[in-house]
Amino acid sequence: MSTDTMRAVRLHEHGGPEVLRYEQVPVPEPGLGEVLVRVRAVGVNPPDWYLRGGLTTMPGETSTVSLPVIPGTDVSGVVEAVAADVEGFSVGDEVFGLLRFPSFQGRAYAEYVAAPASDLALKPAGIDHVHAAGAPMAGLTAWQFLIDVGHDHPSPFQKAGHRPTALDADTTVLVNGAAGGVGHFALQLGKWRGARVIAVASGAHEAFLSRLGADRFIDYTRSRAEELAHDIDLVLDTVGGPESRRFLRTLKRGGAQFAVLPGEFDEEETAKLGVTVSSAQVRSSGAQLAQLGRLLDAGTVRVAIDSTFDLADARAAHERAAQGHIQGKIVLTVASSS
Image (cartoon, rainbow, N blue to C red; front, side, top):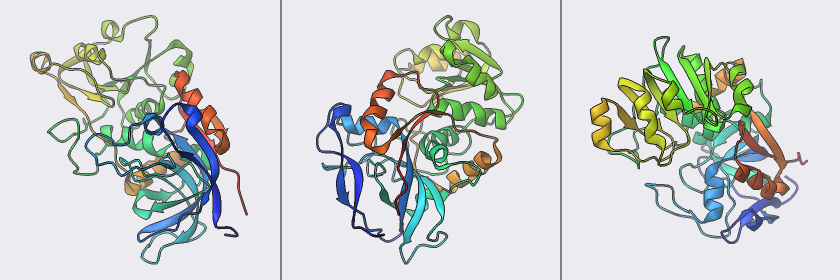
């Protein structure tokens, strides 16, 4: 590197998108177990605007955030330097990862980031940095809910550990919010495992979700999914909220609803219906990301990009996110520097 400073987006106070400042800051030094990544693209995720708005601790975690702070967790870039104790990565490797989640210490909205090597995987050669940066948090959330939790950390949302449902040709899965980041990955992972997938989203996303393999589409602006879908094995609800319990009645006895975002459920109702509700908190995992990366490289799973913005325009990216009806992922791009 020819300089000790870089451009980054930082928060000096909490608030709306206007508090995101693009400014000059020191380049971080990689510590033990870390590599320095020259960032090419950054995925934008809900925790980014949660942090901006004042949430500094994810459920079940201890806050270590102090202002000013660089937000962001999803990154794709090129290894610039490697700590002496790190194996498996070399200078020049293209990598992607979900950094330090569920803490708010990812610090990805920057030209360089010091990243735990264990959070990284080699970027699939078949996709560019923009698409790779859109994959980590949303893809790992879908993976850990549907395929393999991959860790034994207790869930902040329930006493019992989360266990995915086996997916195969005899399984019907309903994905609510199927056009969003987690939803469009969940749809594709369900199809990869052979399940029949019903996608619920607004009508504008029907063609998009059909191209991703949805077997059936329900436009929630025209119909209520719980009135049209029955005998479902698994509901993956990426929306949450007080109405999420309505999907319980779409399930067959023995079925399950996985709540990506918190909902309101009644234990007596779930017991009477003979169904279960389960949730989890996504965690960083380079090993799982490598597995997902193989599917991305083969084209089995694709990353949909809603829109891209320059790193300097992070405010506009957050304003786009606030509009809702996102199709896939919003990504920040970082210009290549010598």
